[in-house]
Image (cartoon, rainbow, N blue to C red; front, top):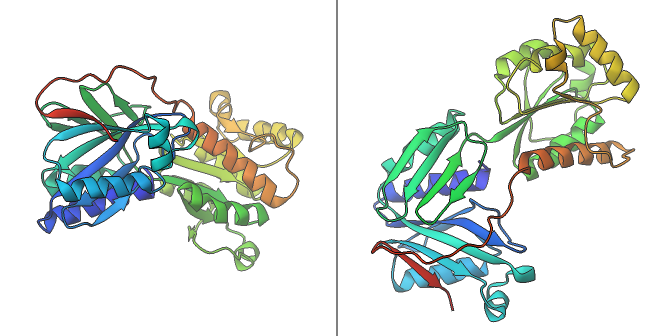
Length: 333
């Protein structure tokens, strides 16, 4: 999950521990150009504290006014942006429409398993029964972020994305500066002292050791990206021979087509099999005919974002008629 949504859960748990009433709002459907992706979270208390976002700000303002008038006690499904007037009022661009689930939270203990899972780099799913309000949290290997069918809201929570960069060159500096804005925690390793000495960018965590040892100690998982950017086969190959045997989401290496073929031949001699080598993204990045270090960094991040977001498509419009006493569908005026 991203840093903003993690902070929403953390803040909500803290407010509940302080005895405040807390409601959590989740984006469950969107159509058109929605300002926030599915699963985005917003939390608010009966004292007016809030964190997170589901729009550019206008919907949050409306929610706060709504909660000031009557703090929610039941699960609600709310739609914004149905008419042109609403789209103008709430700042939804290009015909955007949002559906939000408003969920009063019972106590901090209900959020503890989620926070523990994220900090422990475990993947779990939270199942919310829309009628009863019952919540179940369980381990999962799901490849989706959110599912919603009016009866149940299923949302997957997991560790933040990590980016391990091998090699402290110019491309790495640009990549390290840009990646946090895309919600990657950035780690860097380079055994070459002269490269470490000339590193300029802040905000990265340095990992000491030889590249193969660093990769092993890093314990890559499905939310880990490893890129080798040193241009030195002795450095890059050591990292790759271990990285390609892990569960890392993405493993990439810089270089031309010719150097990539030579690298694959070398890896075969380092106890890496053909199936593992096929996981290597090389030459790294999307083909945007990049020339400068900054452009190469952009191409790498573009590929990472594309692959990370692949399969995340808006749900199709379906009926919103819902029965039951604990769920109300409200079209905001």
